[in-house]
Length: 193
Image (cartoon, rainbow, N blue to C red):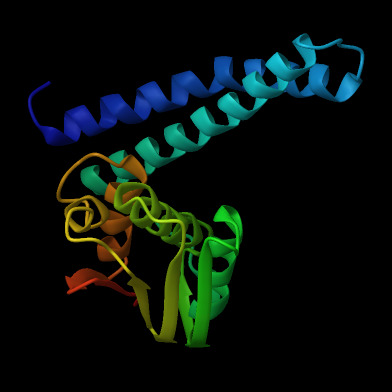
């Protein structure tokens, strides 16, 4: 490997190659879980395998997205979206009892699916690394304000302290789409473009 773009291509290739065996594991685990023929504790083990394989698929997707962004090969699929609806959908991924969304949104052209996953990753990072039970999200047009974000967790949420893949990729995604992510006090502002 001679430069960062070669490494990014290598990571992208690895992500591609990992998807096939992972799809096999996930497919069979899902089939076994739905069959209802397994006795305890095997039924619970298969459910755990199914959930873990879905989580691995999401991690591979995030790593693949980061690779495409870093190598300059990311081509967003732009569709109309509303910032409030994106925030609500991201909150629903984590549980609306953990992420409370309010405010009013604005229409934008963006990569809806990737941005929704990215917002969920940022919300999750604030919860996990801040040791919080819940966070608030206030949407004001193109600005999405996430709080509280602890002083210790802010560098992780901003993708500066690389301890959370989802948050690091989300920040890169927002910036690649022309937006910004910044912190002021206990609030992280995600400005979509």
